[in-house]
Length: 236
Ligand SMILES: O=C(O)c1ccccc1NCC(=O)[C@H](O)[C@H](O)COP(=O)(O)O
Image (tube, rainbow, N blue to C red; front, side):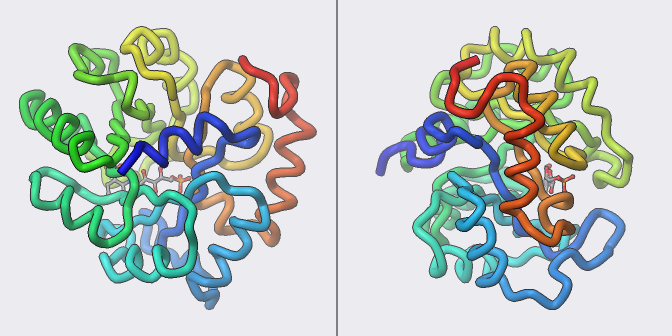
């Protein structure tokens, strides 16, 4: 298995990891009666290079949701869950994931190193999520990892409003980790915020709530294109 997720995101003109999650951090429904199939269809129509599926129970997720989405699309999938053990990695692959979330705030450094290496052995892209510069120290194989700055606080169950300035401040340190794919994740509340982060140099964005609440994911992406000062398709 190759690193499908990382390569798909790096190759995309509109590098959005579009997310499917059942509920927001406050418990409000985000699917609005739509089926996963309808959401996948709208994301594919909007040109998603890859999709994130939240299986974490805080957000109403289940592993069945990942299995269902994998049956609906060939796009590479990220499993967003609290992954702390190696056996969860092989299960992620069996369920259809191409990438796995590894949250620095929840993992001792030695576990992070072990899980990054084990993910790569299984052909899964490690999607390493950080909130502080110190969490970037000594990441092994960083060039094969997505390194994402979470703009919200997972220790507060992401019930905070989020702070996009964290992504802007940490970008030089994220780049210095050696990743080819710095990503900003969470609290990106619309195309203008997304454009600002891509124009600043992020190679990708992870967007859930805002895309799930819009009438048209394709329209959201069109507004993003118009708001960018560096047009889609041009390297940063
Ligand atoms: O961040 C985590 O550690 C995490 C673990 C398990 C399930 C979900 C997790 N995070 C969720 C998210 O990070 C957000 O759903 C995602 O970044 C999108 O955020 P938003 O655009 O604000 O909905």
